[in-house]
Length: 144
Image (cartoon, rainbow, N blue to C red; front, side):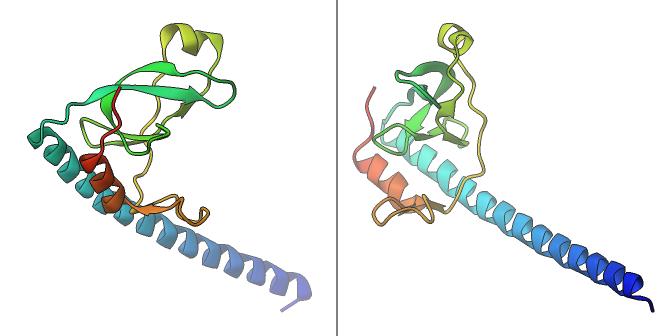
């Protein structure tokens, strides 16, 4: 086999290894999301049973100050209102583009893949198990 053939074989092998790792990471993330979503839906049911009503959710712009109206209702997970769950049990990072159109018409954040550990990799004290965070909001909900 020529040097060029060896290089092509090595490149092909590396690409295959990368694709397999990428697929495994995607599958693990999807499995985590499914478990987290089940946990969120159980918490939503608990919020409702305890009489903790959903509130209108507002998003923060990526840049600038203030908040932007959304059509979502649910519960904030963090006091700074950066994370929330809606009444359907979907998880949201409450950040949106904050242009004039969004400020006038409102914005619609996209649901994100729900993690089992919120803030993974953040500074000490900035990451929480999802169940722990939901329990904190059950005991002390963020009010409108």
